[in-house]
Image (tube, rainbow, N blue to C red; front, side, top):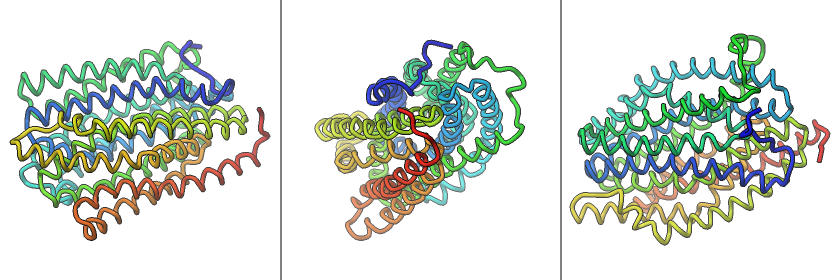
Length: 453
């Protein structure tokens, strides 16, 4: 067995969760780094309209990414449970079946993405002056769906086996590649927004191949042709885990599109400011998603080993760590957010100041309520790790309802700044469902298994 795999069924939960999350966190920082650099290069080199074009495409891009991540994370739950139980033959069959399902899904998603790109942008009333660039960006990103799917599948396989180090190294390498290609394609060759999109996909391909190389060196994952099949109940079982998570992310994205529809009505300056802060959204939640991945693996492995009591202990530890982390990140953003946001914006002095005002007001609201988001990620991931992806899907529906309703109603009551609170209301709505769901699921799990210390 490769030295980078890790069992999370022994040892102190807080230490295991933190040490597993830290490499993921650093890797996510580098992933966000090249997203941020994309935005900075486009915003500074191509101006406010180009920045607004990327913003107009953001939620549609996230829709595709969210579906892909949901599918692969759902597959990873079964992998983590098999690894925790020491059932390596079952693990190999799960990985092989997941690979086939991921390939088929990527082809379907690529075709669907190309078909819906223009109609949806039009439906969202994307301003004419940014429509062409927004559409170009989306079409290129959607062409790369198989690349994005492969990276997410390979990273999920590694994380399910407790290897957070390899995805970290892959992200560091990808960040370097992406930044260099951004500068080359946009500043030197003048490829514009299309160059930024292409740079991101090439970087993802690099990270995908790196993860695949490491997977092939893991002894328990020495797959044979017979493992790559869609037989028995395994495909249905995997889809039953992956589909609710994909649907959950898709519903959340549709809520985001409704927000974007409202934002589009406020003009290009507002769109650009809103986009600048949204690009920092990933930085705000970078630790939250890392703790989430950690808890999926932690809960999955301990469920597979029949150690239910450890899941409760891990949940308490993860919440404590997450709340402290969110408070620290919020403080940094409130103190230095204006200076950070300045790096995304260019234009005339008036355009710059107006865009910065919008961006910082939004950032201040999100930072203040950040702990709500961290509770969401930890709780949802723990429930998913225990094999229940339906209740988190319900929380995604609640998130959609709260986000959409807030986006439509609050601006009508308090003006355009009301749109900043749509995200907060969405987080709070999801948390209400998830906290109740966690206690229901953990209680049910305890009654179905004999807990082991």
